[in-house]
Every structure is written in structure tokens, then in C-alpha cells.
Length: 211
Image (cartoon, rainbow, N blue to C red; front, side, top):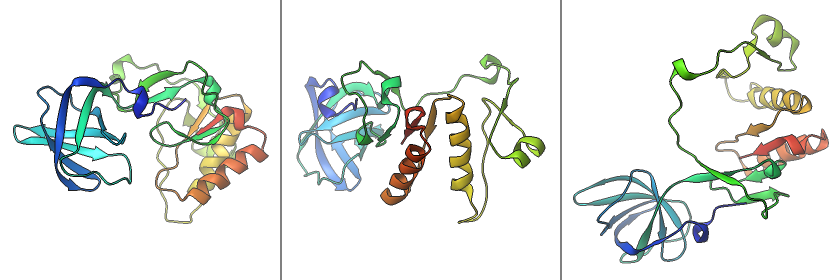
């Protein structure tokens, strides 16, 4: 269930005016109050996010290819950028803004929205890692075991097989019943669709969300 511009509550008594456009960055003036990272809505329905502000204006990142006109108005929402979280969204490809790109997400579900940018808890408040994450690759599981819950960085040249390895690990965990969020940053649409088809062919789309 995507959280579109219409679903962000607009604060009607506060608006600003665009003074400069250097897409995807926009400069605006007019808000009396603001919070860092706040989502704003332009008058054409386009979403943006406050990146920084000072006494002379506000710098905003625009989340659309649509042209933003100088002197156009934008409104505050009082909310940070958030993303829908729901078990009924499994088996779906989402855009970074939470819009359904491909799949069968049940939009009628009451999904909870969680902030995209959130400060992680300090090390002292995190659970101790006691369980191994099975990757499905015997050599990795034996020589370089990965802890379930730890962060792991894959480093290698282009075309070295990092994406194939990641898909294999995601597939192994999905077959174990784990809910997997598979992020594909900067990938072509064809590559994203190919990855979706891979998980669908393996019969585990209900355990996978692709962003």
C-alpha cells in the first residue's frame, strides 16, 4: 500500500514558494517552521524532502522527473519519509517511495508506515548474535560463517558474481521461511524484473520483497 502525496497530511496554513530549480534540487522560501528530513508536497502533487535549510531558504530534493516551476507553491506535511511495512506486501517490487512497481501487494491492508531514515540503536542495546546465517554456499558457511543479524559487505569487481551470490543467499533464507527484503540500488528495470522472475520461478515470492 504506497504512501502517495495524497496520503501525506498537508498542513494547509503553511506554504513556501519555489525560487530556484536545479533538478532534482529545488530552493524555496516561506516556511516559518520545519523539521530536518520533512516531506513536502508541491502543488502538482510531486513529493520532495527537505535536505537543509537556513535563514535564506530551504534546499529540497524532488522525488520525480516532473518539472517544478519557479513561483510554484509547496506545502508541509510534518512527517518524515516513510515506507509501508506489512506481511501482505510480500512478493512485490516497490519503488523507494513505496509505490507498487510489480506484484500483488494488497493495498487494502492496514500496513504500518515506518521511517526510511532511522538512527540504529547503540551496540549495548542490540541482541547478542548467537545463530549462524545459512547462505546455501558450503564453502562460505564453513570457512566464513555469517552471523544471523550482523552486517556483511560483499566486495568485488564488476561481473564477479556478487548479485548471483546475494540472490542465492536470499533464496536459501526464503526457503527457510525467512522474510527477505532484497534491495537493488541503481539497477536496470530489466535486471530487477529478472530477479523477480527468478524468485517466482523458485516458488518463494511470498517471502521476498524487492525494492
